[in-house]
Image (tube, rainbow, N blue to C red; front, side, top):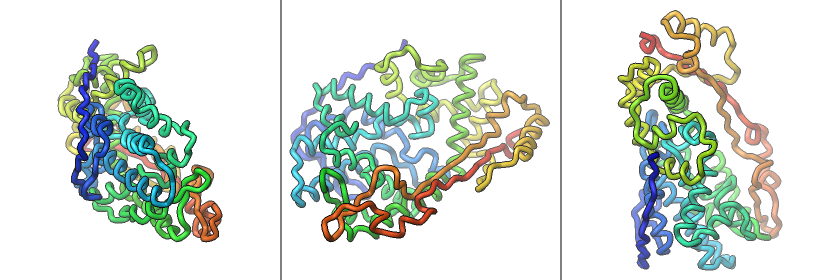
Length: 419
């Protein structure tokens, strides 16, 4: 069995290292432990994980990675800590380091092309769960040095506002990815004023809140996220590419288990040659998963486009050449008769019914601007009282903002894909 063991020697540098970021300028690494974590092979792997999946099929500049995003979120955390300390919030040096580590590692569990492949390859083990397990492994490797960061990440640390900076409706993860994804995609709708939002942060009764004069900045933040989802993250073309890739991997797994095994890198072969991961230790699964990155998928697609299995070959060519299926998006479910016609067309071209699912697939996409029942956005009024956002700003009572907006999509092959 092919198992990858990391042997990492900490560098223990004491100097402040500066990295030049196109969004924020210089980002400082001020802790030897943080420097060592960033230098670790598991974190360096994020350089090879696309931040926005296949969005570059639509927005050519969107080639940035999870590595830059994690560093950007860490930088924002440092800025937040400085703001809160100026406002009288006591944050110890140990907490400062742990907060930066927690946000730095929040995405370390992402699989190739971010969200696209994690469910299939990791057997529905979501990236948040994987990130936590990786953090635990790193903490053991560093002699328990990440235990406080893990406590903040899992919301078991008594100071609850710290977790809210990492997971919330206005957290530092979202704050960086909106600004960064807007920059690289060119979709200016997501360009938020992160500095003003951070300057307006306060802590009241151990809860994260925002000064009342930040209302319009918060409104802009939530609307920017709404627009980025509809215009960028849920764009029908990149969405179609992501769903097509999952079907390519499903077919590759089918070939491994039922026919001739396609060529693949050792870690990708490890996951494709198994239907599930039950009975395998967490350590073994993680060590294999942490070898996977975008290059394994690209390498696979390039080799599979000439595979003897016609279904795998056709779909791989479609992916690698960006010759994607046609996709329709609408507000109502697609009529069964219309979908049936797509199946009949496949059958007329000699495709067997058991293979229909690879060529015609459908589903739903949804977006919600403000989630009042989720983690609250609290406003500190001019009188010093804490109020929920919709109590202070009537704009957020609007049903369109708080309701889940759902759309339906259907992907099906073009004529040239069936020849």
